[in-house]
Image (tube, rainbow, N blue to C red; front, top):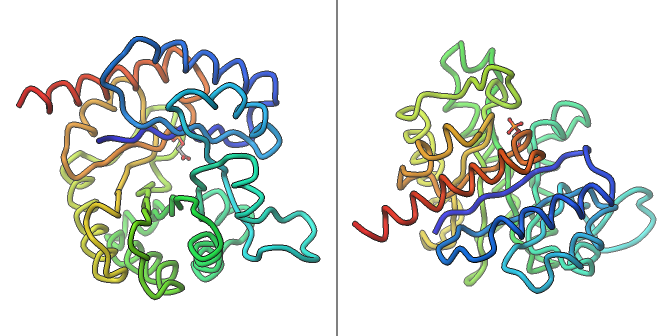
Length: 262
Ligand code: PGA
């Protein structure tokens, strides 16, 4: 299976979110073979988007989560609260959280621990190296340390639980020119991440999904998703425009059909 996750970031209000979710559902109607689709609107739109997706196979995700169940933590939202609005997934440690809000690997680890211990949400932990680190040939080193930092908060991944790791090189996110790593490098990094995470989490392979994010669009999605190492894509910009997101879904369906035929 492949998973397509739409990260709408802080772009859409309730009305726009509902309209886009309805559009996505319309485009999926009648198609038998489909990827898992997860929509991640802003916190404020989650409830209303859920009304649209409730009786569909589209799932809902949040873009961040607090570290404790409840209490005097102004501005925080707990995992239980996200389950309350019917989220099934939550993005943790996105590079924008790290860059603009000072989130460290340790904090991402605390969020992850909270999500795994206090809810049934599926975490999507984001990792990715900066342009400087990439150019200095330090990509693997940085990813390894980010993974170690975040995953060491867990003693392991409990049986039956799933975890997504999104490899999102910072230098490939939201580029106008659609700059992305060459597929070979991407595949290698996914394999490395899988190997590291499996060793740290002592879990089975089917509990772990490693996905790619960064300037994914209808043109490049097929190329990435046909690689067996790449379990899905996390899409920002192109998920905000229905036609572009539909192109990505179509590419994914083509990959699934080709896999089925093989
Ligand atoms: P992008 O964003 O698709 O616009 O590059 C991806 C992300 O930030 O998750």
